[in-house]
Length: 331
Ligand code: SAM
Ligand code: DTB
Ligand code: SF4
Image (cartoon, rainbow, N blue to C red):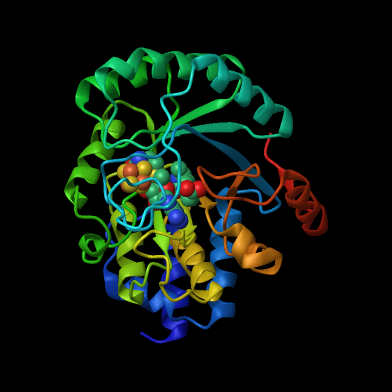
């Protein structure tokens, strides 16, 4: 397929319902479009369903840090990395501390609060505390999101009943590359948790990471999985690896930021109605690359000076960038 055929294919998708039948060849053709054509098409799709000058702000908190039994090669919080990342493990945070921090996030302008725990899966004995967090944060008028690892049927029902709005569980990368990064749980385990979440009517947040030494085919595969689910995830976070010292990926070759921007553009074209979140890595790629991510269809960011364990741009820096670009935070 040449560039103009691909552009026609994109135009066709504009006129149809969202697609769930992508194949890898088509996705790779989108990735290899001339950069200007790709970003232009992505922005055209973006404007169909999103206000191009508005960006949604989600804020993260780590409610239980470190000591995780999983071995995700990118993660500062795994207890399996031999060198160690120097992170102190903590217990599950008290509900009031989480609600107080959420209040501050709301005052700073965030509309969604994402609570993350370094677990393989939550323990049943922790559920009451987690449900109280959902209820307390919701009462502030914030959307709630949690990322706690794998869920069973009962836990998913409990979270749905408490009113959890979103559950984040990333597929992280392509099915083919996955085993190079994680050995302690399978790709299918992740898809099973996503299916449970969807079945309970909780909005799905699922995306991945680029810059882990994967191939262009793997980046295409990382988008193929969520785009071909029965329903597109309502949120798709696209992370650029934050290379944390002491993790197996600490010295992986840096990915050209243009490939990150292309990944956002292709995600926008494939999942036109979803929130595409410009996630980890904003600090590293700089303001101009972030502006291109917004042009490529990113509709959301993680806001606040800390992600889970690594730094993120300070609020005033982000607001200065928004000012320069004429962007407004979503209300
Ligand atoms: N423990 C839970 C789990 O893995 O399902 C939830 C928290 S986990 C830290 C959430 C996601 O953050 C990961 O799936 C991964 O996509 C992303 N992430 C973690 N560390 C990262 C890093 N160093 N750079 C970029 N993204 C990262
Ligand atoms: C997601 O896709 N990215 C966020 C959130 N979901 C939980 C986490 C990014 C973590 C970056 C590394 C850290 O701060 O530990
Ligand atoms: Fe644990 Fe989540 Fe980190 Fe994997 S990504 S090691 S599951 S905290």
